[in-house]
Length: 368
Ligand code: ATP
Ligand code: MG
Image 1 (spheres, rainbow, N blue to C red):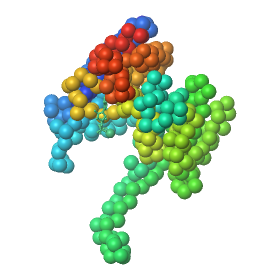
Image 2: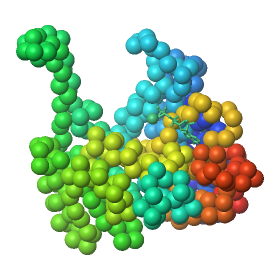
Image 3: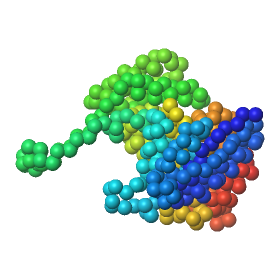
Image 4: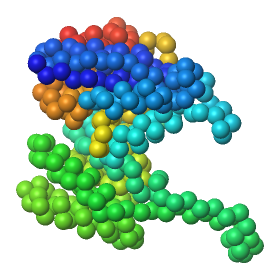
């Protein structure tokens, strides 16, 4: 029997509560699909700062590097907020582990469950059937370019006086683009009716012209998969005007950051969105939401984003696609049967159908 080592990072806030549900689902699906998982918890974020003084202890990184996949919950909280720039911050643990594992691509599925169309920020008829996969480049572009700041730059102040001048460099190499676009086409090939939309600003930016050249080259190697380019401003509009047109959407780091947050609102709740970060090292899977300190410890957090991140872990981390399909189907059935956590309960939902974190997971497990 195949056996996989999973490095579990519960982190802070609601993290430990929801991670435990993810592990229950992973163990259950493994038993049903005939593989074994060994899950081991390690510290990251605020709890790691408290225990060791650093948000990413060497021991945690070594465990992540040695594992087949990392399952993370969330890090951070007001307890570690400080104005001291030298103090360690929980978020550094997350950035640090992504960087150390060489995770250059982020996947965010945006799936609107039929049972939740009323929870969306948009009209139900617009979001019904939305099922897209956003593929975002994660380690290049503006966020990683050289930064400069000059305090007294001549002519840069108000009315031509000396003033502050800043610049952020936007850079891409074709190899960085190629590996991400190639992944998007592979993902589309595995989806029924899969097609790819590459998003850029090629009418203005040099990096986007390169992006478009590379995307068209990869598209030409995949003639069976429908492909289009779209300018990012148009895409921002199309996402709210006609979101169901998209299948796989691939784009650079900054555009992807903004568009994926925009798209997340189509589903109505942060508590439903999972993400995967893939690259050269151990892949990492986590909910898209944060540590929700306002509800930590209350047992009411929605575990579904974490559970859906376990589905991504099975599909993209372990190659166990059937297990992933089973988890997604069980979540869908749970929602169709009317079970809700408070964050996704429409007004008028019977109190008896609103469950806490563990009980919601129980319903998913029954349906597995
Ligand atoms: P971060 O900076 O870590 O991204 P954030 O400040 O953006 O965090 P979250 O921690 O994601 O925010 O929380 C935003 C809001 O969404 C909060 O009110 C929180 O309670 C709610 N929320 C987030 N995740 C969940 C969840 N799994 N279940 C229920 N509510 C959630
Ligand atoms: Mg946030």
